[in-house]
Image (tube, rainbow, N blue to C red; front, top):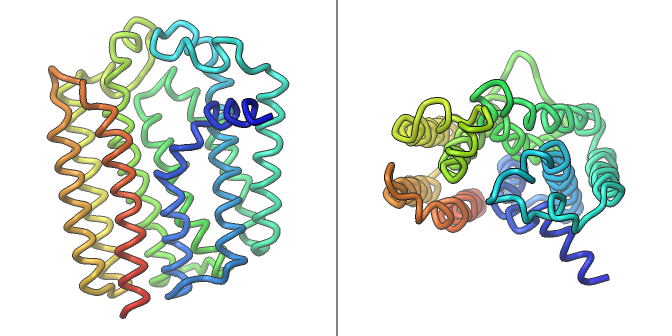
Length: 291
């Protein structure tokens, strides 16, 4: 049983949940202007876990033939035959049950908006076959996290937009550009494979140097959007210090990867981005709680 659970956790790359779940809690903290109730934190976490696990399982299912051809991914659970098709569908169904049941337990608006998540999760893998924008759709899939956390607390989305709605959108697009930026860096590993198999990653379409430029610009846009968030919500000095830390981490990430050297891509992808995510949550929470 433990071996099976580890297999399933590896299949959905559970450890990468560290990238974006802090942003779900970030949205909840900003919306509540403090630490939300334990009940909200629990259902937000379970909803995010379900949404992300289902998205990863769907991506692996849709890309199974591509992954089988790619030497970097050929040993993954599906191409290697370590997990069956019925097990994959079981994981998808259970994961989406967690998402929808958690949304139901939170409030009617969360439940009404929950179907958007599987739709974009299904669209994302197919975009790799046609347009070099899949990195940004992946980013948006994770960008839903702070919006979901925010709406879990408020249950309201007003139109025309007020400060809360503007803040949610700033967070949505900040996470979108952040994820797109580091996913472009990660896709450098597969540039030769993508070109050979006519897959439309940014590096395959535009080349390594331009891909790194697009990644860098995406991360600059992320920082600009976070500055906008600070101004809209009138966040304090601790948040400003956090922005400086995050900017330094982003700069460090881009010094690790060169156009002629991809050796440090794993460090840039996992270590630095995990630090960005956790720093964002920690500095924002401290700013809100101590202000």
